[in-house]
Length: 411
Image 1 (cartoon, rainbow, N blue to C red):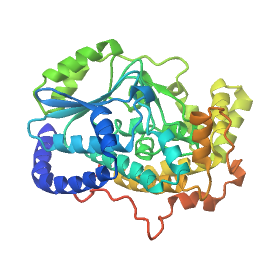
Image 2 (image 1 turned 45 degrees about the vertical axis):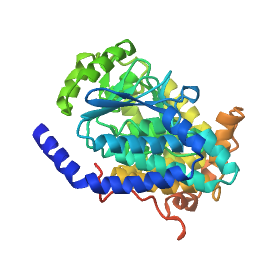
Image 3 (image 1 turned 135 degrees about the vertical axis):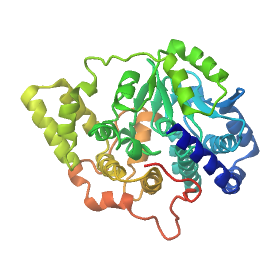
Image 4 (image 1 turned 180 degrees about the vertical axis):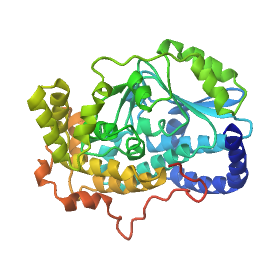
């Protein structure tokens, strides 16, 4: 298997090198020209740092004051770096980590909120285009990749790590896709990786936004390795000494410092049977009915807390998110990202609802934690409202263009 991997890697490098550079250089030029000179310098050079070793490179997300939230400029720099590293024969593998107490808390939704309110819709579109295109490049990356998920790993932070080859969780890792709580949908490729989790765990995580710890991440497949955070310096030191592009060598190095995990008694993964029973239903209403039925029979604390969480979320966001995850189960990564791009632009357009702006206002700006959802209830969310999120954009608004002819998506 390893020989086939290497043969495919070399062949794709040779075939795609020139075409990939041409496509991405054009893309980066378009992105960067729209940014002021000072923003290019600050955002691109300082907010994504680089550590260079003999045979590897590490990208460091470096906005610790905002939990390393991703901006348009960061996405553009990551594209440029990763493309350069992929085509450099002297680099065997790539890693990513975050500064401070977070790996990455997702996209910079507060800046996005202010751009929407200022009417800067083209900048908003560029934000999604840039990040989703980077995630596709990352998700089809030809070289081994190691993501060190020490700390908060939420939303788009999962999008820039989960599609990679190796994901190292720690005792400090906190994973979540909490978008329904801000009137949005799990995006940045989340409808792809959530839908491929065991049973209906993806629906549960996507609808409730509940958190998983590092032990739970490796138990369900979101992470590939688990190590105590005190060992991260040793892991990084060991990786820095490697002179290889062989995934098996990197995996052996990671396993050397890996720890066994033990799930807490209250872990949701101990409730997978009842979770699957409730979240396998076709509609959000039926899911809630099933949870209420279980809660009334058993007074189960997990059912009660899950119901409370669902009732805090945007009704429209819940229905849109359930449909998105269900569709993602039968789509490739590129198909999910193209669909999510449609959904995201519909969600920020305020044509159907202002739930995204209202959710960000309530949780991140005013912080009153009292969003006024519209529609207010699941019953008021029509089928047409949901379908609108998935419909093609206007004739003057093209779909997301990904370099699918240059890089084949994994399924």
